[in-house]
Structures are given as structure tokens and as C-alpha cells.
Amino acid sequence: MRLFASALLLTGSLAAAATAAEPLVSADWLEGQLGAADLRVLDIRGGDDEAAFDEGHVPGAVHADYGKVGWRTEIDGVPGMTPEVASLEALIGGLGVGNDSHVVIVYSGADASAFGAAARVYWTFNYLGHDEVSILDGGWRGWTEDAGRPVATGPASVTPATFTAEVRPEFLIETAEVDASLDDPSVLRLDARPRSQYIGETKAGPARAPGRLPDALGLEQAVFFSPDGRLKDQGEIKALVPAEVTDGGIETVVSYCNTGHWAATNWFILSELLGQENVRLYDASMTGWSADPSRPLESGQSLFDQVSRWVAGDAG
Figure 1 (tube, rainbow, N blue to C red):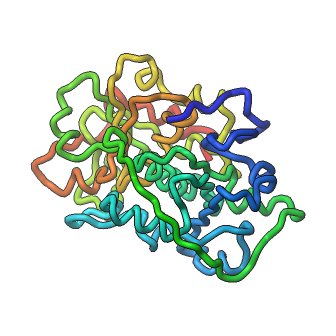
Figure 2 (tube, rainbow, N blue to C red; figure 1 turned 90 degrees about the horizontal axis):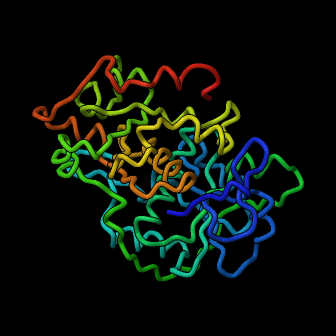
């Protein structure tokens, strides 16, 4: 966890300015660092953007498709799970990233959900004990807003490196732990999904049943973004987080969604931008939780349902 200093805020967005340890770096900062010996730029665009890397990318970047290269995997029928540490070490080293590298993650910049991919990769590095990692504020879309910035084309060459993890188990929470904590008032379950899924009107395809984890508080991750897909400024972000999450009365915040994708954004907001140290990512999320019909689910409005406060207006 690294606190994002408010002194580094730029108008309309969050951006880092000077040090290699900031969770978000601006396009200007990255342009100034191109060619640095310790810099490794990972372009995680995939899906509809699969061919986009060869058509244009940040000079020196390597392609690390979020959906294909192994950032997440399926375990016991549950998609989106964190792979074995050895698999992640091999993946990261194969991308040319060593323990001394400063990694900058480039996502498409299209919208809030695209940011979730960058947040999940960022979380993975932190889980593996690697703090020298940042997300490019605005992603590829932000990089290309200035037509004067350099763009490389074609495939990239990669020189493999050795990456050795020092796992921080406190960054991750598993289903058994979530189950055991249901009656613990010091544990808060924070749902990053849209309101319709939170109240059980709809469900994501991988989940067995609609609903939410018991006594979960809804905080849809999309509310932190402006219509242009950029993160709002820190003051707005802080105001959107309910007091139950930040008032110090909670020992553990369990960030979840359907497969740990949107949940990574809420983890990133709370841990990296607001400096909250008690947030754990539940990668199995609703898909893993609901796979067992004996586990409890809630639906409808609840005492904790704050969602309408956030989805109104320009939530983005």
C-alpha cells in the first residue's frame, strides 16, 4: 500500500509527478522516462484491442494481454482466480520484468471497467511483493491525446528476466476466510458491482445465483470515474467512500465483485489512493461464493444499501 499524496493532483484527474513509487503516473512523466534502464511498460490491452498493440503502443512496451497471458486463471470452475505463484513468476519474468524493474501498466483507457484490468494487474504485483509498479493515468487513450507523443508499431522484442515473489498473503482473502468472518462485526464486505446486481435484480453469467454477500455494503466502482473514463480527483473520490469504510471501526474490508475484476478497482482506490491498509481482495467473489448453494445470499434493499447515492448523476 502506498498513499497517493494530494499535492500531486492535477486538474480533473489523479496523476503522479516525480517519483517512481506513485500508483498513477501521467503520460508526461512516462514520456520523460522512456529509455530508462529499469523501466518496463506492460501494455495489457486485449479483447477488441487484440491487434491494437502492433498498430501502436508506447515505445519500449511489451504486450501482456490481460485476458490471455495468465494474469488470472480458472480454479475448480471459478474464473478470475489468482494463479499459482510460480506461474506468475514465470509470466512476469518472461515479460522482461525483474525485481528491480519499475513497471508501468498501460490499459486501453476506454472506461471504468478497462481500468479494472489495470488495477487487477497492479494488485497482482503488490500481492507478489513488488511495489515498484504504476498505472498510466488515462491509459493508451491518455497517451494518444497528445499527437506529438511517440508511438511504436509492430511486435516487441522481450529479453526475459528473473522475477522472484515475496508473497503478501494479507492482500488476498479466500472463501473459507470470508465464510468464517460472516458474524464478525469488524469485517466489512464491500460490493463493487452495479446496483442491479447488488440488489439481486440481475446477475453476472458466471455466478450461480443473484444476490450479494451477507451484510455487504454496495460501492459501485464506476462512480469513481468521469464520463471520459478518467478517475475523478481525490477530493471527489474521498467524498464518495462511505464513513463505514473509513472511520477506523473496521479491521478488514473485503473487496469483491463477480470475479475480482471490479473489486480490484475498489481495492486500488482505498488502498493506493486513500492509504487504507486493511483492504483485502476476494478474487473468487460472487462466482466462487455462490457456487455452493449452502452459502447465504441476500437480495433487495438493506440497511447498508447506499448504492442509489452513488449511481445518480454523472457516475460515469
